[in-house]
Length: 220
Picture: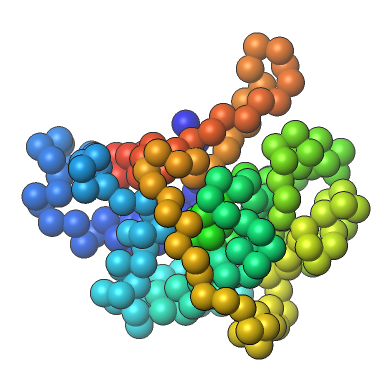
């Protein structure tokens, strides 16, 4: 399974808070989630945000966000995604550079109940169109300079949202409903990765939340 790199930067901070008893008898460098107590990655993030709201969560060349900032923006975006019809199991395209917006997008998709479909920034337009259609992606999160690469059907406000400019203020003033708990569990889909398989044609591999959590915890 492929681990989404965008989540790692804040999950590392979460894992630093894990007590020795959470290691479950495995070597110190490899922590595995106990299925009886394990939680989805976005739930671990919310717990960390409650503990250290003013601590720096992410920083790139353009901006710096505290845990409180990151929670606020990802919650806002999750509310917008739900207003567009995203719910438990919906596949959402994440098509942004690997910077703060990518982490915000991925967190928001999880919180809305959706599954992340990473669309790499170097994909040609025809491949993007093929993947979006094949995966049944209804909404893509991106930035304005990349929006034109999407198929026309996914350049409208109902199917695309750009995380640039005054998007936070725009959503704050939109009167969005509060997040509806999508009742996502560890067995539900978290993200989809692509493999060429034996035919040479791309195929989607669905990864559940329990697998994502295990992968992250086993790496740190």
